[in-house]
Image (cartoon, rainbow, N blue to C red; front, side, top):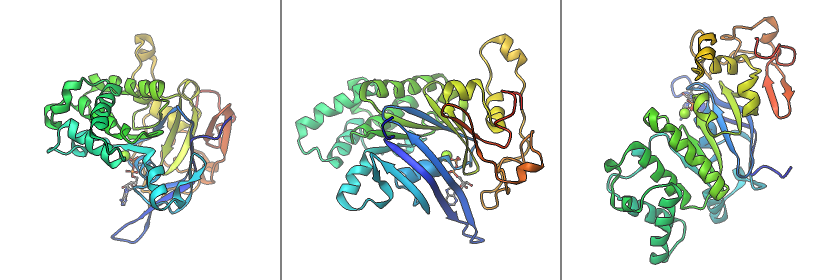
Length: 325
Ligand SMILES: Nc1ncnc2c1ncn2[C@@H]1O[C@H](COP(=O)(O)OP(=O)(O)O)[C@@H](O)[C@H]1O
Ligand SMILES: [Mg+2]
């Protein structure tokens, strides 16, 4: 197996609460791999630390400890011009395309500017490249003259993705890229990530709070809760045989397309909200909301191997009957 293009190891990103001075342990010891040309999902409820992890990977937040290796280089140690060039190979896509596009620029101008930032000095070459970028995200060439407000949400998000592609990235970190979009067009934008993988060999970290949306594109999925990865696996294993009660609860909230299955679906309702990352529960962080919690959960659980590449951070992950916790 070649080394993953992106390897995050025991990454911690904490914030300081301005009122109390306490540590907000938003991302609290996360390890995650992304292989070249792979689409990986990162899923969890709001406030679990997904954006903090994504933003730390692209350098928008500062890590407290741990490492991020990209193409074998230590990203956290990179400085200066080469550092900036390497960083550009990982691009971030924001949740809200409207606020990440300037209202005063046409699509053509926004893409042109991105190409200039990335060192393309030749005007004719840029014009040709703008059309290529639009084609790469399946947008018609006429859109070059449009402003953000004159487009649909889906078109705007495609423009943001095209702008990210101007940097010739190897990795896209997409933070809830379809959350702000109409439900009817979410799948189309998710399919675009599959197209980018197939056409350009793009690797994507797809962040979402919804397990169902990630399933459309991700080959592997990480489930995050309160700053930690709770379960990791190939999509078929994680969706078919979820080992962690948290994953099971998230999955039980997803409606099923087959009417008989939907009829039989048992919802696992989680009580309460995600606890504060300033004061996470001792032992297993999920234990205060876990329907299967016992006394042993007051001690930290091990990462338990369930199958090839399928692990869960739960005392019972090894011996629980599949899907029956
Ligand atoms: N800049 C910040 N300053 C202080 N706290 C923050 C900051 N950014 C995020 N947090 C806190 O860190 C936790 C994780 O947030 P976030 O990474 O945005 O989660 P998610 O993207 O999963 O919703 C939350 O409790 C949030 O309030
Ligand atoms: Mg977020």
